[in-house]
Image: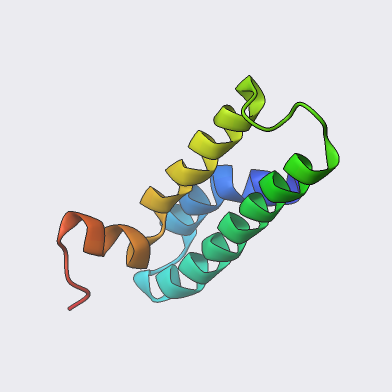
Length: 85
């Protein structure tokens, strides 16, 4: 998960610096996969770790995972009223 976290933190900056807009869709799919992995990690940690559910770290993980939505174009655009055209 450390590589997923590093990708989420710096992947968009690398894309902006070195790639064209054509790569946006591939990065969106990759970030969506990362979002799913983070959700899966939260669910599995709730099952495996006693006391994790509704703890401070649970809420930190939820907020940080949900903040990833703003980086995924096809998730945020309908929320803010933008179209893909």
